[in-house]
Length: 243
Image 1 (spheres, one colour):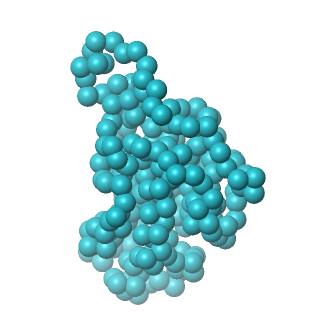
Image 2: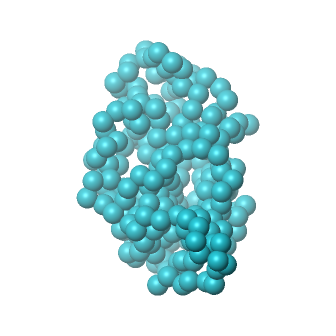
């Protein structure tokens, strides 16, 4: 149940407060799951072991190859792209299953940070991923990777983090930072996985919506960059990847 802390008059009349007024329930996970380590298992199986309404934030980076299948650039098998192409792929049905489970385990007003490329963001595929859940889009971040990628017309230099929140939608008392720009430039010095994500950005997002010791879940962890972000911010990580 939410716990409310005393606020100043200015905070009481503002739509924003740097003080968190909700606290998550104690962490309860089955004994066969281990915190703060790299688990190798199916992400759906992991989430189905968790209780309803217990997790304040989930990161989800779906592994999809729609941009290759539909755009047909012709260079999918080059040395630069072949590692990504060979990864096990998620179809739309599986992505929806993941998001449905994420909605179930998130606490009320909890957040999903959903990584998205431009192809899926601009297509109609994304529109129904959260249908039937208690999630809705509340914001979006653009990650400027500082280097060119694929592109049929314009070249891709950015990825996007779509921010969804579980009902009830609110920022006050939940989102406590106001210094995160909606365009974030961060270069990854050495890419250890085709889907490596920016640790500093994910650290700021974790700090914005959790307290120290809270649980952060990543059911398709890839490079486990969220684990590293949790270590920087003294949060507990629970996540896995199938390979």
